[in-house]
Amino acid sequence: MLPPRRHELPPTAGLPLSWSDLRPGAPTLAADIAAQLRVPALQLECSGTAALLISLLTLRDLQPQRRRVVVPAFTCPLVAIAVQQAGLELQLCDLRPGHYDMDPAALRAACDERTLAIMPTHLAGRVADVGNAVAVAREVGAHVIEDAAQALGARQHGVSVGLLGDIGFFSLAAGKGLSIYEGGLLLARDPALREQLLQTARRTVPRRIGWELRRSIELLGYAALYRPHGLRLAYGNPLRHALRRGDPVAAVGDDFPLQIPLHRVGRWRQAVGAHAAIRLPAFQQQLTAQAQRRLPRLCAIVGIEVMDDPPGAEGTWPYFLLLLPDQPRRDAALDRLWSAGLGVSRLFIHALPDYDYLTGIVPPQSVPHARDFAARSLTVSNSLWVTDEDFETVCGVLEAVLD
Image (cartoon, rainbow, N blue to C red):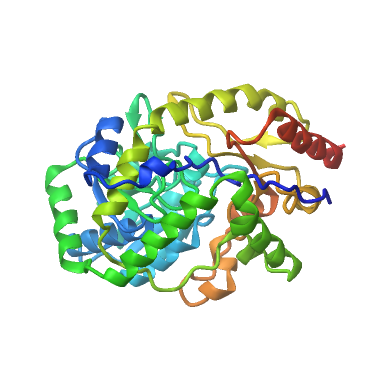
């Protein structure tokens, strides 16, 4: 195990807030991001999960005879919680072998006249195969919700992700490319569906001053601590404490409450996001340039597979998602790197059926490829704070465990 550093590198490349971002201003965040992405109007919600929940409630009202939502078996536990809270049934789809996408044959087998929605997921900023999900959905009369929580700014054939399906959503949570600590953006291609999403939110999302005050205080803390000298306190020390007590789910932050809070985002947090959004395109260009410079070094390590985008797609690069040959060597790398403050982490700890706290929400199911992906994957930060020396240290450990 490498000794912890004095400064802590984040596991993701989030856009740091400047103190000038915290000044009052116009609450134009949704409109500003829509203009940047060149997409129709975006709908701002209090989290990416809230945006998903509103999507599910809207589709449930449109097709009340359909109850099943098909999701990848390796995805964020919040997806399962949102399906449960919407009063719908979760249907898992196994992954392609050694890949983050849903397996096409398994997806077709999972869908029928009971299917309400299919959720292809742009995991880790990589662009998913939405086209196959759309084709299957059209066959059975279902909708497609693109989970682009980790992919704000990603494009396919020059068009923002979220527009190939019926609905898409992005996350503005802590550590994402743009953050207001918690927030989400909803996207729909069809104007009538956009209006229905808006009406669902007006009907179901209350004004809750307590929640907005809490998020505002958390945003101030994020602005102060999301930098190398503060992340040791806010992220590194809790991570190492969780690992010492043998709780990787808490270490990676997969231990979510079983109720998704809903409230309206206040004007001040919207203004903070709008100020920061001005810097977002240039920031993402820097991340892409750094990723393209470092990818050959990772790909040259024998035994490592680096997840990349399909032809015609341009994902974002919050971190590199790697697959190692087997779990023992993945675990050996994590033993040396996870607690060292170098920005190495895991994406999700388990495939969805394997979280104890989701028993009763996620049906038991054989999903061997999702379990294999969980067992062999790790992430390497692409933060601009990761120096060439830091990155080479990580690569050297990976080479050593694979030798």
